[in-house]
Length: 125
Length: 348
Image (cartoon, rainbow over all chains, first blue to last red; front, side, top):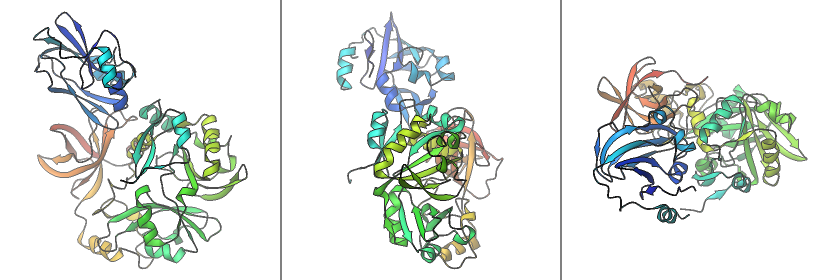
């Protein structure tokens, strides 16, 4: 199962790419594989304020629905409209065009997140 | 929980990289690497093959009268060499204990009764016969090109017409072939002895037929408006509520559950199964409330995203006054999906 170097990970299977104070959020290859074909994304609204660990988005596949938890606290500043229109991008490019949203972080402390090696270990890879 | 049973095709599924899932006591393919939606689209556009070995086969020889008394439909409407869809009812409240396809062999004496996986034992209790499930695999080849592709592998099987049944030889093994399925597409189902199952599976896949798993089987049957036992049929649900009165042969004489079903017909059903199309891609799901003018009028039994239509579809039990064309809402975990009541099948 693909784990990408250079990203940070939450134990709930979200990935985080930090650029300055903005965190781009998606779900991992492991998560999309477990979900199966994704058919719908309930994305958070722009300007929504989220706390770390809060369920703020939903991803639905042909077989189930999964909550997406905010891996960091902050304010949603962008959502991926291309993904809303074509949710299958989350299966085909979970770390690329399948990103879900950007959060402007309240703090630059991301020490609670895992690095690629630790996440690989978590998922038994 | 008992250990899961494995299909004779288990090794083939694993070799193809299938993701497996427990279903009805069996470990069966949920999907292959191409995924549920690609498999679904292949069935609507071309041809797929499902391993449906988890369906039971109960073989009843010289059982015509027993089947007539046990099941709702009338075998006199068909003949040897034909298949018939029918129901087994609870004798007390007419709940549909199982929905069944009967394959009536051309010999006129042999009936292969095909219950749902988890219901095989109760069907044997009701009608007797031998459970021969473990002796064979069943392959369902389905899709507009199913017969054309199958004809390169097993031409006689490809020629079996809709709801016909034939006993045919493939490479010197005897198979039972029926023009039946569960997708809304043309195709056949082939019961093949277990030792020959892998060879036939590989030949069919080699002819360009896409392997498909239970995920696609479920989205396909839902688009076709077909009931799934445990959702649209089961405890407390009668043939009449499910809109399947055509399965009930009122005039053939007595059968299990008839009196209870007559009583329900006389007083009128208190709910009816309807199709609902919802706006947008969000899938309605089983157990979601169905709402009309702010009032709960029913509950979803199956729902999903329709890959062909591009929006949500659902089957739901609703009050009998809810009619095709009515606007209706579905409450999906607190979000309201707007929809309307539509005729089924959703996809023709």
